[in-house]
Length: 224
Image 1 (cartoon, rainbow, N blue to C red):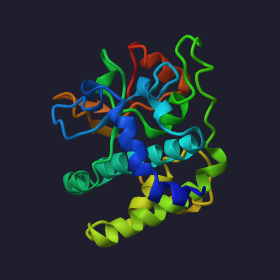
Image 2: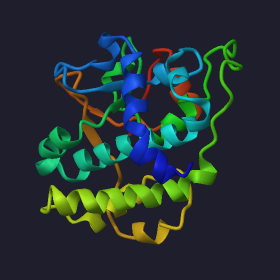
Image 3: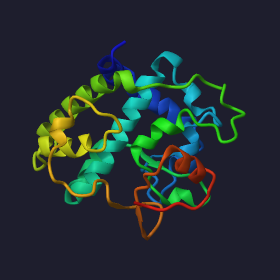
Image 4: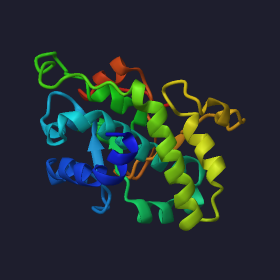
């Protein structure tokens, strides 16, 4: 199955099944209960929620989740004036830390790739095979680029889709064929972003996989 086939035919049902397997207090961990949240530990091998996605589709699912969270954070960071309209139209999930404490933070979407292969003490490392996404990343980014351009052409014509997409590409964790599209001076990417779970302003957390693992245990962290 190609990523395009998966994204257009299966991702919606998979993300609904995955989200509904998570207790309500975690999947709606926000004052606005229409906001869906994915906490870091709900993707790890220490919890069963990713088991709801068929094994053959997990890599595609993880890529689709990454790209969905990414475009949401890019819109919030760089297109704040239009963000509320974008959020109402898409209802994309937010990727946040664990309770206690880390749930106040939005994590960088690239840390999804670390979370799905993580087990806090290693005891659950064999629960699921590791998920590798690198070989499918170019194909997935092509599909999302097409989705981004179509979405803004149809629903939010005040945003330039080429500019929006360039800001997505600069956040990619791998070198891709889209790298030349990110060659613009856009400043520090994914800067401050208010966490909707608090009344204060937090930053998108973007540490190493080890730092993210520590954060998932409720230890201190530093925002970007």
